[in-house]
Image 1 (cartoon, rainbow, N blue to C red):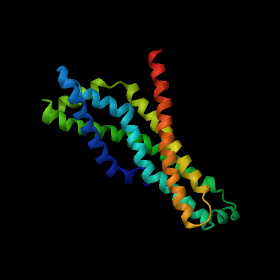
Image 2: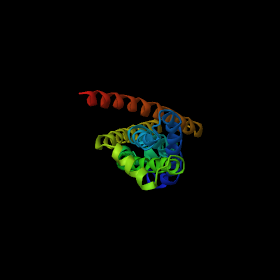
Image 3: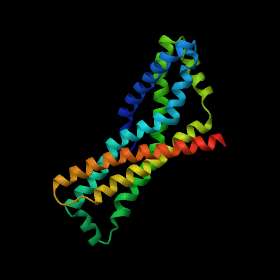
Image 4: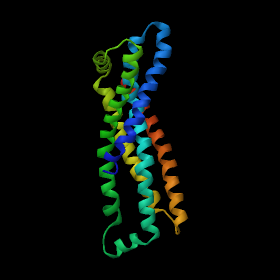
Length: 214
């Protein structure tokens, strides 16, 4: 619920507008070449390969990654982690493992939804300004996509989920004494997560690029 379902409203709104912006930007250049029919393809490919997974990850970092760091950091400051260890309960298994499972399951699901909302946002421009019907826009988007395009984004989102959870939980466990340190750990978790997500995105994009050439 926390990692996935409750992120749907804000994710839907943002990715819908991202899809609309992509359509506007693509149309700005494509109409110079009389190629407005390729707007749907441009939006679909941009969302599934890159922006869908990346925007989803950034939103989840702001919602869940920071919450993981704050929750575990607060437990560390209030000595709840020590209490778990005293009761012979492994803090990693009890606190971290469920977060990993939730994130690696929900982030690909959220990415699929983000892709859909982005394409839907692009269709608003396509229907109003590019002489598409809604049905023709969706069919054009589907025709532009191959299975590897969707899988590329899902593999990235899976790795993003691992990265976000690992960083958030690690920063939580590294929290020092005092409430001020909880805030610092939360901020650091967000900054480091965004940096590592973009780095992971770069690595996998390069990897997929090399594989596509082969």
